[in-house]
Every structure is written in C-alpha cells, then in structure tokens.
Image (cartoon, rainbow, N blue to C red):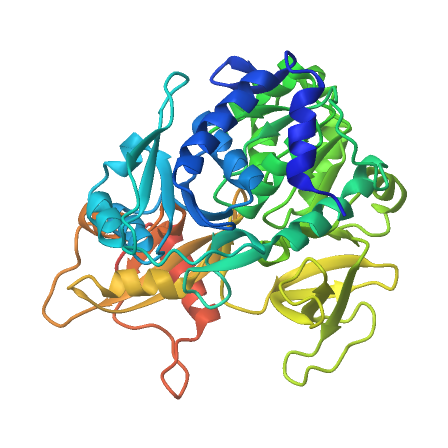
Amino acid sequence: MTDLAALIEGVMAVEPDAPAVEWEGRWLDWRGLASRIAAVRAVLDRLELPQGARVGIMLRNRLPQLQALYAVVLRGDCLVTVNPTYPDAVVAADIAGLDLAVVIAELADLERPGMEEALSRTGTAVIALPGAWEGEPLLRHSREPGAARCPATPATMIEMLTSGTTGTPKRVALTRRAFRESFEATLHYEHRSGDTAPVLRSGVQILVAPLTHIGGIWSALNSVAGGRRIVLLEKFAVAPWHRAVATYRPAVAGATAAGLRMILDADLPRKDLASLRALIAGTAAVDPATIDTFLDRYGIPVLTNYGATEFAGPVAGWSLLDFKAHWGDRRGSVGRLHAGVEARVVDAASGAVLPPMADGVLELRSTQLPDPDRWFRTTDLARLAEDGFLWITGRADAAIIRGGFKVHPAELVSALEAHPDVREAVVVGLPDARLGAVPVAAVMLRAGVSAPADSELDAFLRARLLPYQLPVFVAVVDDVPRTGSMKPILPDVAMLIERLRTQGDSSC
C-alpha cells in the first residue's frame, strides 16, 4: 500500500533545484517548496497537537494555501476544507461550528466580518498565511486549553465540504485508506502497475480545479506524488490555460465541460495544443458531440471520468488505450470501472438489480468508499455494460449540475423565500450549451407588494448564495402549473420560465 506522505517527501528530495510549482509567472523549485511546507509544519508543531488533529484551511488556488495543504497532509493531520468563496456570514458560521484545533488562512480572509468572533468563541488557534510570494506563516492566536473540544481523527485524511445528496451542506470524512486506494487505482492510466518509487517526470500538471473540491485536492496530491511540475491557476480562463499549454507543452491537461466549450469557442490555433495527447474532463457530464468536435478540430481525445467527494476521487474513467479502441462503440460512456470497484444498476423503487445496459440508479461498492463492505447508492441514473463501461444518464435527485458545481433547488428556494416580498418560489434547471444546466426561478409575491427591482433581488441573493447558485433568470408569476395536490409540475414550470425568458419578460 502506497504511503503518500513518504512518496511526496521522497519526490521533493530527488532533485531539489528542479522547478516544482509555477504561480503568478514565477517558478519555485522543490527545495523551496519543501522549505515553505516545513515553515507551516514548524508553526503547527509549536501547538503540540494530538495525532490526527483537525486542521481547517480556507483554501484558494494560491501558493500559500497549496503549501499549507501539503504541510497538513505530511504531518498526518486531518485536513478540514473551508470554502472562502461563501458569503461572510456563512463562512463565519461554518468556522464557529467546527471546533477545529487550528484554522489556516490568508490574513485577508481572517479579517472578514464575523471571523474573529467565530474563532475566539471556539478557542481555535489561527495561522495567518502571506497573501503573496513573500512572508512567513504566523501564529496569531494559540489555542486556549479546554476552550475547543478539537476531537482528533487519526484515520481520516480529509473532511471534505460537499453539498451532498440532501441539499444540506455537509462534510464527508475521507480516510487515508480510501485516498491510497484511489491513487493506486489510477496507476493504470500511466502503465505503472504499482510502481510508486519517487521520481521526477517531464510532464506539467495545470492545476485549475478548485482546491475546495475533491478534483482539486486529488490533483494537487497526485501531481506532486507523481513528480510532476505544477502550474497553479486561481481559476479557469482560456488565456492563462492557453499560455500554460503553449509554453510548457504538457502531454495531458484538464478542463471541465464548460472549459472545453470555452476553448472551442476561442478557436485556439491547433499548433498551440499540438503537445496534448489527451484532455482529462471530470466534474460534469461532457456532451459526446463536444468530444467529437475536439477530436475533429485538434485530433485530441477527451478522456472523461466519473467520481465524487464520497469516493475520494474517480471510480471510472477512460484510458487513452480504451479511447482509441472503444470510443466508436462506447461513445458517451464515462469510461471503464477502475480495478477494485464494483457497480450495479438497480430499480429505484424495488432495489432489484437490472440487467446490463438497462437504465436505473447506480450503486457502487469499493474500498474507496466510507464502508467498503456495503453497496453505496448514488443519486445518478446510469447504464452499465458487461465489460465495465459506465454511462451516466441523468440524476435521481433534483440537483442542477452547473459547470460541474451542484446547485440544489431547495437552497435557492430558501434564499428567495427569505425575501420579505416573496410568498413562494420554485426553482428548476434549464439546459445550457456552455454550462450543461443553469438554475432559473419562478416567484409568487405576497399580496399587495410590487415586484422587487432586479438589482435589489440580485444583491439580496448574493449575500446568501455562492455565485454559481444564483439564478440566471427570475420570473415573477401569479402562479405555476400544479398537480391536483397543489405540487408544482416541474417540467411545466420549466417550459413556462423558458417561454418568459425567451420573451425577455420577468413578470407574468
């Protein structure tokens, strides 16, 4: 079984003067990365934390946060992810309820409204990171003995914040065992078959997936453990991604479904992408037509995969060999199940196992899952071939997947109905060529009030929701289509909103 911490430390010692991470146009070598990690570890060591202490990091795709992530993993602490893109009040409430031993964050994030009160209330120690290249991590507050419960969890590697399947944000505990299994399951993509000796590779990983998401953390750990240089981008945009590919000529790069469409829309020169043997696409379903277009225009296969936070990474995916051999007859699949992963498709109502290629709800069993001995029912509709190729055909819940981000209608409904003028809200998803789907809403007003101005409603929602949760259109209506029991008929609501949106009318 691979020891990820030992492997990462071994990689950093292979050739210390070789480049390791590029951020904001500057390179840091492996010695510099090891030194920065050691600086964070030294501050943590001063706190004399128990083994497996829960350490929160407000993660952004920036070098100081990346080095803190590695420091926590190498120490054997439990990394608790905190998403700083949430509104101030949401982040402060999250911190207040976590009972963390330590919180690590940029000074600017620590100075946000409500943060100091939340941290002092729990007695959480605070380590401030520099917001740029220069500067050292500083211990701002030591933990007051007994002020925070700070339960240690030695078997857990990461508590990953996810919106889950119920619509209520929660954290999923990912064990060290699950991460090791996930890492080893992907070795077949590189034809390494268990060879995990520390080595530096010529490849470059463009790290653009958010570190607050499982794809971002998994890539950050997998890249450095694999001895690859990292080009760290704060978020995806065509221009910096294009520059990184054209400059460093990676053999493989990643992009979301939305990113693929943006690259195609930009019509980048074929020669600039000539180094790419493949593109890896996860987080959201990719239209097979997009894959075909990429293949036709650039000659580059797009290798999709399927995973989730609960799985500690992907459980199925396309290898380059499989793509070349089977894309024609397995078009639209998310790839083949990884070794050690069992899957079955069941009837949603009865739970009966369905025959190959029948549509139903996907269930999985694997050592990557929290309970490796039980079948885990996902919220995805799927088809499964006898040879292990998997198709994801839809969702069994009402979640809207917007560019790889899960939007639960219930959260948006709650925010809309918190507005004093809104009596009832209904939220549905509409197809979108770039993002896959986007949330839209129909609202019914309280008697005697006028519709709020678009700008006022937008400001109201932005204070309560993440940017990707915001509706792209809100229709004010007298009522929505309903069943005899007064439940909204969601397909009819979607048709109504689409018609109003097309007409440019936000009221009815």
